[in-house]
Image (cartoon, rainbow over all chains, first blue to last red; front, side, top):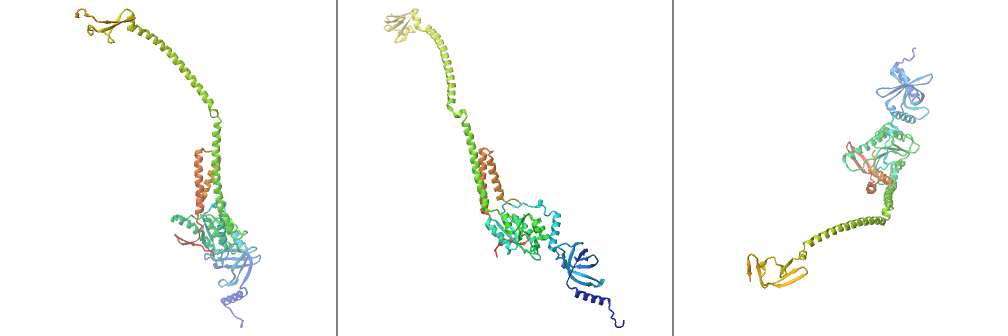
Length: 417
Length: 74
């Protein structure tokens, strides 16, 4: 024992740690996760086990935050890290830096996990999908200002419907923090509509948002698989079209958006009507108006012509003849009445004439009376007669002309002798 | 999201055409519909041409202020 070296616990532990750290500085270990817990400080503690052994592991917050999927007990994983010793407990453990699910990539798993989670929440449900306006006049775009996506979209817009207003909210579409930028951009475009309304600038509000980027690897597209972006799309009042990468790449954004386009240019094709088509629709409607109106008028003409076929209008002469006949009958009736009336009146007149005759002085003369006239007037007073006057006596059958040789008034005597 | 005015006008126009094609109206109301339709067609054409084709970058300055500047392709 003389030459034997006596370690202190701390010394031994440190030496063991040095040995282990040197021997297992960067290793990969495969096993099943168990007892996975996250401390309040954000560090994760778990064990990796197989049938016969168990390895304690720690995953510090810094490394843990880079892991895209949710680690769960029972998961078969491969962990990268280093072996070291936790002095206070005299315990060796794996200080993990990465965890990869076995059999599939971490990102693939993360994708599936988030998809599953949001799907259960109903975020992808059809009932939340907003209708894309058929004729948007103002399009918001969330993408990189220097990427292929914006070029493609603008090219299509120029070709199909160049009058549309486009507001680009530039973002980074990959790398650390890009998901937050994209989420914030979607929110800001919504805010901008409120701003338009508040300032009454007369600017047409944003009708639809295209969120996307050109194709890339799963890592490149990763921002569009982040929960933050999915939530921003879900919360947008403006309908969102997700347009990420190439046709085959489906992202969480695609599932969440109101419409999924296989590529950015396809998004533009889908939402922007062709101006010529719109003009054609207007022209067609105008033509429709004209021909419908023409048809209405034609119908009315037919109706009028139908009426024209009726008895009255087809042969107005008949009606006139009939009316003439009626009038004739009326006239005849009036004539009959009049002649009858005249007859009666004539008879009345004859009667009157008889009476008149009886009163005529001529009739008196017939009875032997006579009238004496002077200067054409009947002498009604003896005093108007003077001796020597020429007088005329009218009696039945003629006149006697005589000269007055004396005037006498019985009772008063002769005035002149 | 509400339909744009253009869309509403165009749909209204197409509805009027359909109604007129049914021919259920008197000459008087047909004439009125026709006139309304012509007005809508004109309004649609004007709206199409009026849209401004601005391409701009949107920048949020603060909570209540946005700024826009022309987008230049790189």
